[in-house]
Image 1 (cartoon, helix red, strand yellow):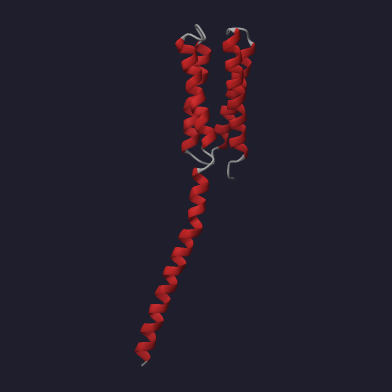
Image 2 (cartoon, rainbow, N blue to C red):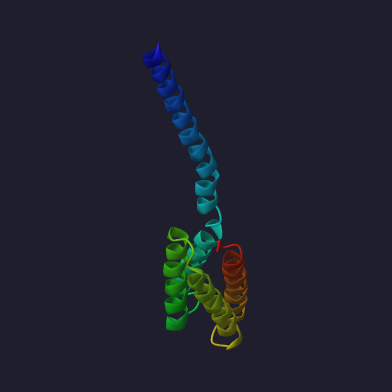
Length: 138
C-alpha cells in the first residue's frame, strides 16, 4: 500500500515536471520569435547598400569610389546587424553612414538624377538604422 502511494506520487511528480517543461517551452517561443522579428530594417539596409554599389558600378554615378565603398560597408554592416542581436553600435554606424550618403548627394559630385537617388537612399538607410537601434532589445 505504501509502495503504491509512492509510485503514484512519483508518477504525479513526473507529470508535473512535464507540464513545467512545456509551460517553459511555450513561454520561450515568443521570445525566439521576437528575436527574429525586427531584422527587416537591417536586411533592407543591406539591400540598399548593394543598390548603392550597383548604381555606382553600372555607370549611373560615373567614377564614384566613395559611393562604392560606402555602399559596400553599408551592405556588409546591414547584413551583419541582421545576423546578430543586441549590438546597437552596428545600427548607429549604419545610421551615420546613411547620413554620410545624404552628404554625398549634396557635394555635387553626382549628377542631378543620381544625387536625388543617393540622397533618398541615404535618408531611408538612416531612418531604418536609427529605427532598428531604437527597437533593439536592451
